[in-house]
Image 1 (tube, rainbow, N blue to C red):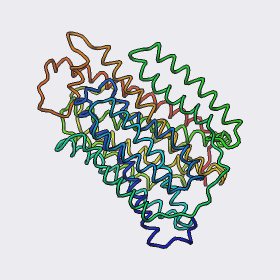
Image 2 (image 1 turned 30 degrees about the horizontal axis):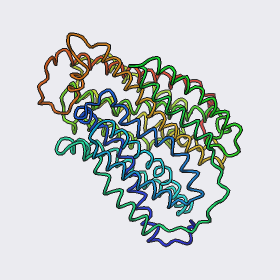
Image 3 (image 1 turned 90 degrees about the vertical axis):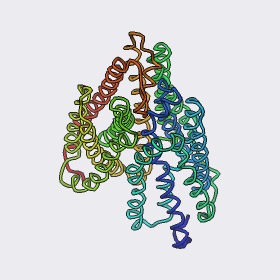
Image 4 (image 1 turned 120 degrees about the vertical axis):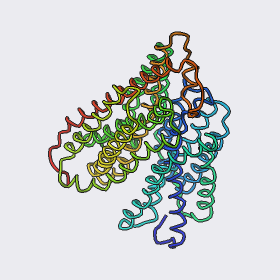
Length: 485
């Protein structure tokens, strides 16, 4: 779309749609995590709980690079409208879900829609605003993400406590309809459809196979280890074939040239791993507090909110920090503090104070707010101008993969450790029933079940700590020792 051909009114109609769409897709993660214990309890889905998040994140990750290519040929409006409609249908189906497997399928449909909406919000802004205007508009649109991070857990907790978990998904349906109408009426573009679109189909195939087999393999490890190992072997083969395809294809999904810079590669790896840490805290802090402390969903959601507040506040410090310190020094210092805070959870007893979760969450927010924002800025700065868009998409894909893969890993750890501890007549179903938001429920053998859940949660956060150790070491290996300007 030519910036000079659209009026001010049309421009802000489009921006309103983009703002709501950004809020709608970003709030999906924060609002659902608060409702997870209630969903697991009602649908008896403890064995599949990680897939509630993973299905959404997986389909989003796979489709994001595909939609980027399609938007160039079919136009931003058409692909964006498609994504909004599919996301809205997925939200409606999620709210209507009668079973855990139906919910997982509906969440996958949501992710297919989100894969178009999320990246195209940035592309549309670039289309309709000049370079000078773009920074302010992007900052304005980012407040939608910040708003979703702040109010998502609160909305989720309120809906679960006063209505039901179904409304956590229904809330996005009217928002999706509003966006669809705004785009239909106010977003018009004159495009020349490309007949020379080159899509890396083999790259898409190998990427999809590697992601799906990786997640299925992780899920299968705790119940069917032979199948899990077999799937992970397929993952390795698919990754090798994907890399080979990207090296020889003219217009690859992910260009290998970007990774010639070690510092760039470290930014991508750091953002990916920290996103895996993030999903662990978002999913398992509410489960810990609601299952063992019997607090309400709203109260548990405030822990996630406290991290989001600190994330937003800390992100304003990034510019000043980068101008004064070497990036690896910033990353090492903050990741080290995060590592120490999460280490305390491994040894936490039943008397571990509730306020400590808020402190850890705030430390998490400060660390993530600075380091992940720094990863984004540096990944764009360290590549040629003609690769800035690709670098941003690679970082976005990495963050989605970090959450997707680790959601499956944490779920496998939780289920495996719970099953290993079942004794004295305690069944997996009984443990499932304890993971509920209804604090007034009377549960038989509670004194035996609580230690099982606590030990399983300890092991989940052993996984989180291991991730932080890895990312700490990776940043130590960063060859850059200068302030980047």
